[in-house]
Length: 98
Image (tube, helix red, strand yellow):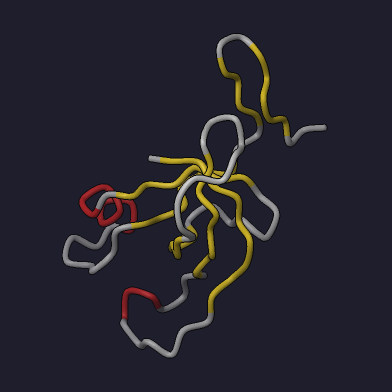
């Protein structure tokens, strides 16, 4: 699992049945303090996230397939939650609530 900021949406001409009805998000992975970490990723959205949201992401095939309820799906990366705040070593390092 990792944290990421949603930086956009993806429209793909790839027509795979598992993608029907799912939004694809472009993500910028982050370390716990909110600094960019690694290359951008594309993920299936299961949390109704949008641009500007900080999200929690599964990046493991079996967990992603279980989340989608599709044991044979060719997926790996799925957004499973929108993050309200991050507390690190007793300090709040991110707070979306204001």
